[in-house]
Length: 142
Image (tube, rainbow, N blue to C red; front, side):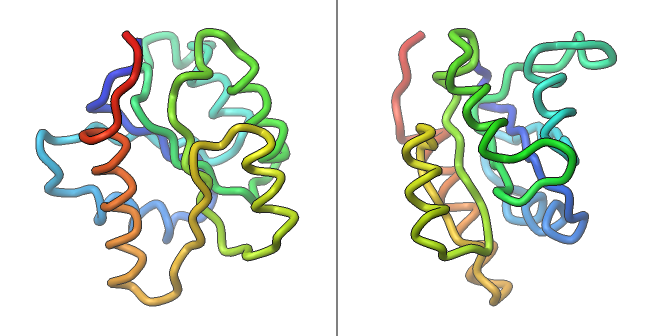
């Protein structure tokens, strides 16, 4: 069962990871944030493949839509097709405003699509608001 206190950030940009951590700091109760720098490691983490056999099941995933190694669309598809993972909400986080990217994300069953704001305060607010909604407002089956 997903743990609402755990968030998985699938992001290859260390600067964006740092900003996401900053945005989530102070949310109560405290969150444990895990990072996978690419899609391959994200799937290992979620499927508990060594060295991630003790990884917590996240209550929320922030997924960059432009990842190295494994295509983000294939990662999203793999998660949503896995009966053990599909209920974890996935927030696609990207700088793209391409209509094709938005459509692809929703067709692959992303829970929402957010553009990375360029302005710092807007970026922090967007991440914090999304996390608060998915972790404290939305209800999920047990």
